[in-house]
Image (tube, rainbow, N blue to C red; front, side, top):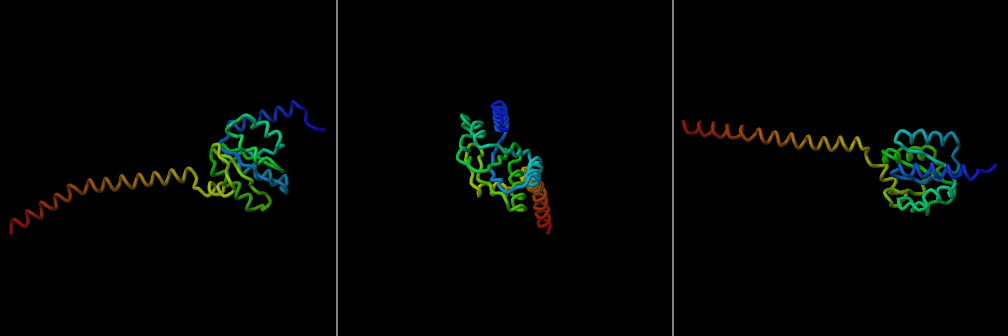
Length: 175
């Protein structure tokens, strides 16, 4: 038995809500994946606030219809698609997807959309290769700490250097 019009409208509304919260959307060809593998992917994505939805392309078209941010996804809507909608840790979700694909060797990322721009597979891989937000913050904090340490050492050296110069001058004046 097919879906009723009401259930299709409910699915479209749910997709619109998820898209409204998402920062990035990836389109994945899931053909050949088992239910267990799809569950594994969903579990991995949950850690980085990612959601994997399998729905008909026509329902996704209706969800993005009239939405200027997501309308570019239309070009990717063909074949068997799973939609990965990410809010929050975009890099972490891309890493989770890439690790999953490396292990299963069954799915392929068709493309994605981030901030209104269509992304190729290479661009998605590059996002996945970026360090996490926490690592970047730690690197920035370390760089700032190193600069303040150098400034503090430099400031403390001025009086020490002056004192050494005066002592050397005083010593040379006595002889």
